[in-house]
Structure formats: C-alpha cells, structure tokens
Image (tube, rainbow, N blue to C red):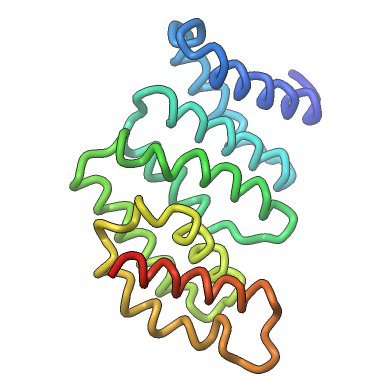
Length: 187
C-alpha cells in the first residue's frame, strides 16, 4: 500500500507512459485501467482523485474502453466544478472530449450530448457550473458542432447571465464573447 503522494506520482508516470509509449503499454491495458479506476474509488482528497481522472482520460484517448466507463468518467468530470481542481478537470476534459468521437459511435456520442444538456439544466442555478461546461464547449467547438441545435436555446438563455450583467467578472465576459463567436462560427 503506497502513500497518497506516491500514488499521485505513479498516476502521472503512467499517464506519461501511455502518451509517449502507447504500443509498449498496450499489452498492459487491463492493469492500467484497473490502476486508474482503483485510484478514483479511493477516499482521497480532490486533487489526488482528479489525477486519477486525468490518467483514465489518457487511457480512454489511447485505447478502446468500455462505453459505460467512458460515460461515467465524462459525467463525473462535467459534475465537478470545485475551484481547487478546476485546472485538473480542464486538463482531463481536454484529453477526453477530443477522443469521444473516436471511442463512441454516433448513438453513444448522442448520450454524451444528452448528459451535457441534462447537467446544464440541473445545475443552471450555479454559475460556476455553467462556466465550467461552457468553457468546455468553447474549447472544443468542432466536437459539439454536429449537435449545435441542441445547445442554441441554452446559449440564448445563459448568455445574458454569463456576461451581460454590469457587475460580472472579466472571465465571464470573455467566456460570453467566446461563446458568441462559437455560435457565429457554427451558423
């Protein structure tokens, strides 16, 4: 049994090895998946747990993965918006989201889109959550382009709250401009 800091360093090492030695690591896919998943289930602090999510996202991007696991990781990352893990969640989603079309068929990709919309709807009262999800859409507009029709109504609803209030922070205003640019590019 390793200490938590050592496990985090092992997660980082395994993530790098999957990135730079994918063929060599392919023979150990089962062990890599088990290692990442076991570390998510441990009762650790948020930062340590989210290094495990980064590790699993790298695994998903490199190797075929069961659909249920892909969806569980995606939904868990969408639901996470705590400030202390904001950067790790961004890194994990930036690894995972571009891999979704490669790992999922059209029907399964539609499930991801439905989960995204569902979480947006359920968490629409929390501005930090909306910002988190819209940032993901803005960073990966090509992935969401085929499903743009499902997001336009929510853009219209959320845009005034994101950046048109007189006292909103610069980050929100920048996001609302970027989101407007994405919508214009989509149309």
